[in-house]
Each structure stands twice: as C-alpha cells, then as structure tokens.
Length: 358
Image 1 (cartoon, rainbow, N blue to C red):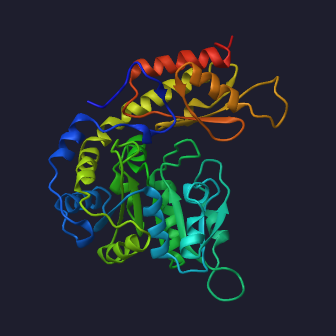
Image 2 (image 1 turned 30 degrees about the horizontal axis):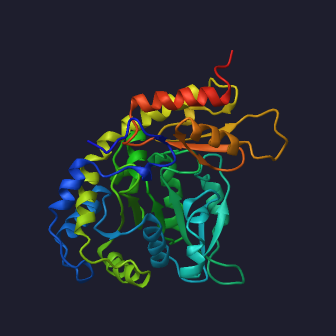
C-alpha cells in the first residue's frame, strides 16, 4: 500500500508528491548494489534493461531527474548554435531553467498550438536548413502527455506526421515522455507504440508511476554510451544507487496498471468543477491525471491575481493545488489520493468557488 494520509491535506499540487509504498521500501532495503559510475550496480542495470524494453528502445540510462534526461538528449541530438523546435508551453522551455542554452548552446523556436501539439504545417514552416544566415533547426521535441496543455495525450495519428517531417529533413526527434504511461493508458496503447520513431525518449519514474526519484533516458546503444559520459559531465554520476533503482523497478512494473484510476479521479474533479460558477473548464479535455481550470471572479479587476486567493482558501480547507498563472490553477491526481480524498477536494472547491451552478 502507499503511504497515504487520509487525515492530512489532499495534496493535488503534483504527482511528484507520492511517498514510497511498502513494496518499494522492501525492495530498497534488500537491493543488491554496486558502483554505478563503474557500471557495477546490478539493480540499476536491470532497471535500464526493463525501461528500454518498455518504450521499445535498445538501451537506457538511469538519471536523477527528467530535466537531466531531457537535457542530455538535446545535447546528444543537436549541435551548438542550432534551434530546438517545440511547443510554446513545452516543459523543456518553461521549466528547465534555460538549460538548453546554458549547457548546450541551443536556442528554442516555439510553435503555437491549441492543445500542446502544433499542427504539421507549423513544424514544416519553422524548419531551417543549414547554410545562410539563419539559425538552423537542430532537433524537434514533443511532449506526451503534455503538462501545461492540461495533460493532453496524443495518439500515433497525431505524432506520425511530425516524425515524417523530421525524417524528410534528416532531423532527429526527442520525446519528453515524462508521463508517457499516462498517455498510453489514456489512448489505449502501449508506451512503446507512442515512443516508436523517436531518436531519444525520456520518462519519469517519480511522477505517475510513484517512485521517490529518478528518470530514464532511452535510445540506441550507441547514443546511450555517449549519454553516459554526458551524465557525468552534467554532474549526474551516481554510486550505490541500486537502492533507488529498486524502487524504480517496482514503479515500472506496478505503476502503469494503476493509472486509469488516477484518470478517473481527474475526470471526477473536472466534472464537479464544470458545475461551479467560479470555475471554467471543459471536462471533455481531461483525459489523464492533470486538469487546469480558470478562476472566474467577476468582482476582480482585470489582470489581478484571481488564482492566489483561491489557492489560499483551498489550503486552509486542507486542499493543496498549484498556480499556473494569475487566472489558472492546476490539479494533479496520483496514487496517494483516493476516492474519499477526491470528494473532500470537491467539497472544498464548491465552498471556495461558489457552490453549484443553477
């Protein structure tokens, strides 16, 4: 069982707040370990093998965080002085501390979209070949599911045209699949199916899958050999880390089957929010464990902080959430939040956002 606190706050800030469950703690306590920088940790090797197989890649590298996995991938795929094409709300752009520029000499070129995945025509129009005075395109980067688009998952028919453009232009493609198992559960396929055709794939163990720490960068064996050196360059070499990899193995083996319950809880929240006069959300767009709603406060001045007071009132009622901006709030369901806690959260939202619509 997870370390769920039914009497504590209902923590919907992120799926990163989960605590190791009993099976993970047992696995950590009994893990066989070695020095991973020397390649001698058998538990890490097992995790890397299973992770690569799970997303249909040849090899994998255990890294401390999803940001490190993404940034190693960009460094691998794109030469300094080139551009990373990505959605304007991409995690690699908004939440990775400018690392592509600071660490790899890359700059982003952002594309607009209505749901986090720009249409093929937008990608095609942004491609810049080498030569001339413009900054050339170095790599295309997609995110699935898409965090700031509200957890939107993309099926193969949305992905394939973009990958076809990349292949036609002889450009590599990276998948930020931090929550790829959520996406796969939502569209009814496997993570390997969604990852097919990408040159590099990163996914997190410490989000929906519930491990305490760690992510995997997956690619060809040749690229992972180079990635291992870049991990050390970026300060990510770890020693007897099998104690963490053991928890990761439990998360990878057991976590995906639990995700549909998290998605059901998110839909329940979205349906309740759609009935409230103080919230704006389209429940049909909520398909994974993330939902983003807009606060409607007709008394507030334009441009004022509408989300802040709502977050503070929810916190006083024992519900924690995250701001997206001055108007929008994000809720994320996860393993450590059960049905009773979802109902507590709904009651608090009703109290703060004005009860039911007539």
